[in-house]
Image (cartoon, rainbow, N blue to C red):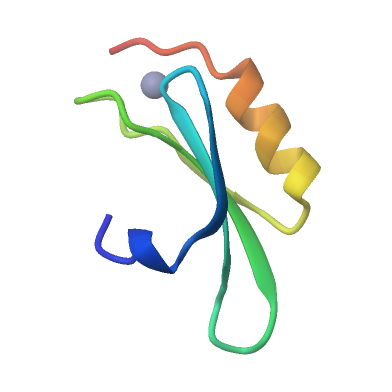
Length: 62
Ligand SMILES: [Zn+2]
């Protein structure tokens, strides 16, 4: 994830990292991305709570 260092308020739920960033138009976006090799799970949300929910409920197949 090349833009990782632009993320703020990063926290982890198991293998999933949740981070907040700005998409370049002043709009915050919240991403939940699994860091397990080969998983590829990644979601984007307008709400932080939605991103955290996605991270918490992710069941990793990797
Ligand atoms: Zn996963």
